Amino acid sequence: QVQLVESGGGLVQAGESLRLSCAASENTFVLNMMGWYRQAPGKQRELVASISAGRVTNYADSVRGRFTISRANSRNEVLLQMSSLKPEDTAVYYCYANRGPGNDYWGQGTQVTVSS
Image (cartoon, rainbow, N blue to C red):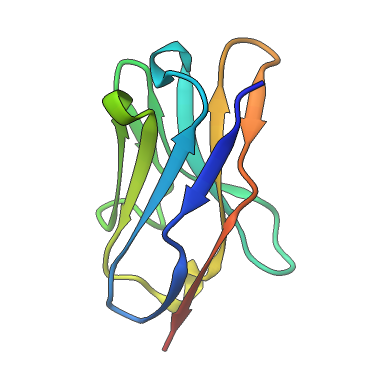
């Protein structure tokens, strides 16, 4: 069982930046895919960004160019740097990790609120 703990959420104004961190209870070298999802009120959970063990990244169209995902394996962390935030980025952000088929893990979520 992999435990994921997010931090770094908060309330910011449009145009500002935030950095989310996700600390894993296991060495992230053993995790195939890590990423961030978000869920806004009344909407489905959606992928924001992901990064493979080989550091190949993927972004939702809505955040590409504004968000950057990275892995810090030495600290067992995955980071999401969010810039030029918009009110539509307001959501609960969840950290995700995969350790092979059927082994998906989720954090408890951290709230990001962007005011206009």
